Length: 227
Image (cartoon, rainbow, N blue to C red; front, side, top):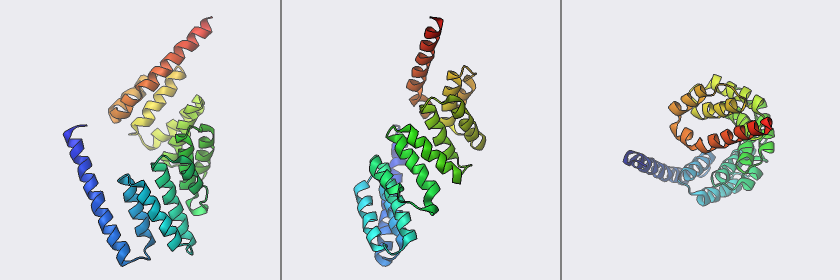
């Protein structure tokens, strides 16, 4: 990490700590302000203070138990805390409780939770359900595409990645993964990797192992076909 990046992170941390101080004061002055609890939990997650964020939201769930809409939002927030802490079973349990208002966001987070725990079939099912209520949402389309890629459904993955890139033509991650799909399908993939490297060099570098794995897979398939 460069000195500039380190300084940037330190500044972000200081801003977040200042926000914690301000939100704590806001709660002390207005204990009935449910949004302040939700916002404070979000900032605590940014600071990786997951246990504190969980404790805060559990307390808020008790305080606002009679307000159904508030309770829904707090369950969504708690799910995000568990997701950030990589406790995916607990995250799934929270997102499962959400009703109609939070359905799209909740289903997307369920999809991401299942995807992170390696269950791509369930992740695909929930991401497709989320897509029903938000068909032009780039994040949802991308989760659908990523799970199709993981399951080996390349032609469908290509269709969804193309939709993502149509809506967001500066999405380096989507360009890289679209390149992987093109490579497996025997299509021209260089253009996708070139854009990915330009737009998101970090993801491009991280993806080199994935790229090598797919190249080996293609060579293996060619060898099997020749025999």
